[in-house]
Image (cartoon, rainbow, N blue to C red):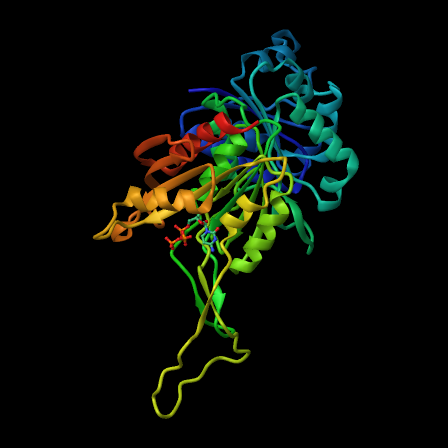
Length: 400
Ligand code: CTP
């Protein structure tokens, strides 16, 4: 059981902190909520006190005898500010201490996470970006906001990540993950691409994006700046990561090349469609009176992984491929994978045995990680987040 301080600052997303609080308390953690004065315009102290069974103080002049402004921070295992407004981010970056939350942030020796939520303009403002960079440079985890509907009718980057995602990121930090990817930019592709035949039909595959999203969650918790290029994934946005949505293999290819420009590591966890229809028909393809089904000619898509390997310049990102393999009469799964590793030229290949539909859509995975230097690491059946951390361990050993 950990002592969590949940700082709530004044944004419309304050109400979502109630769900976050419940996730912690139901898992047996003790949570103390410190709302800022302006956040009480959105959610009152009674909500926090009833849900946390603890007083929800805002300023330092209540219960002065308890020296709360020092004690709370000193005793915490994690301070999580969610939602974090541009104002609290700025105050924390400057080290101001004019209420209980900012005092607690200054006295905390434990890990600190900010989950910002604000309008896109505020997030993108140079002042906010500089403040975020300052906090990150001090080892504070600042999650990237999600993209979606904001307070008004507008849409953009600035939404509070889903409470379950913030909770997952917090658990990773609580587990004491080292920040060994701090200062690194990692790019992960996830999901499966679709190639449209006509406006309603496509060729696709069964990749759910779960392994890619687990890799993102793990990398965020290890301090990386994370870009996820997601092809048709219907999971909640990964907290703390920059998300780029794509549909086809060509979209994925373009976005991966763009994101890879300053990457320290690239993981191709997506399943790009290997083939696309030679023609896209603008109107829905109709059945014919004579009952003859149309023949569809396919063209081969470019191999993005091999292209990313070939595009490496002096800044040499570590490149990781995935291989979904089934054995056959001639070769075992590992023999196929060794040949693929050599063919693609990447540094690491994560090999899944997908005979009989294993892996797809599941939260669990088992794999073998082959290194171009001849290393072989077997990871027994377990959660995809565990495999994700083993993959990052292997990347960290190879990254400059
Ligand atoms: N990959 C890619 N571009 C493609 C196809 C695959 O970048 N057009 C990447 C995948 O993201 C994965 C790796 O290549 O990291 C291996 O994918 P896989 O489907 O196993 O390999 P293929 O190259 O398609 O080989 P094959 O189908 O012949 O086994």
